[in-house]
Each structure stands twice: as C-alpha cells, then as structure tokens.
Length: 126
Image (cartoon, rainbow, N blue to C red):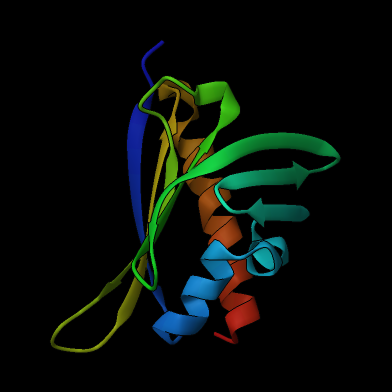
C-alpha cells in the first residue's frame, strides 16, 4: 500500500544550534525521540520499548536538516526528516517533520509526532 507523506510544522522556542543537536545526536534524540539512540557516521539505531530499529542517515546539513531511513524501507522513497526553518521577518524557529504513514494511520502518526515534539519542547524549556 502506498504511504501518504506527512509534513508537520511546529514553532520551537529554541536556538537553532541547540535544536539541531536535539535532532541529530545520539544523546539529543535519546532525550525525546526514542528510549535509546546510537548514531555512528551514517548508521543509526533506535530503541523504542525494547524494540530495535536500524537505519541510516541519508542526508544532513548542520543546523538545517537531517534525514533518516529505517532499514525496513531501504530501496523505497520512505524516510523521516527533521528540518529547521527560520522566519526571516520574526526570527521564529520552526521544526518541520516529514514522515510517511499508511492512509489509515495518518491521524495516529500525527498525534504521536505532536506528543514527541511536546517532549522536545519540555526539554528545551518551552
């Protein structure tokens, strides 16, 4: 079944540098995204509730974005990405999350991301 692309935008009360660290480092991601995260070069391992998911970093640009692909989606166009966007006028920082979900899981997936980002905001103090 074809997955649907999700793009979610969240206003973040954080500096770009600190936010990027939370999105791109093992320690940063372990604080809000998964129970445990290991990133070595382009290899990534995520642990949620004792379940390991392995993948790789497809692309990244410091302070702008990082894109991961889990091994189960290798050879497909499916990935998840954290991008940082700054409003040129206000200086507001936004986190843009791109992900893919089955049609019947879009709402659930969106709620999961909202919950995760709530945790991230809590860590960032806002």
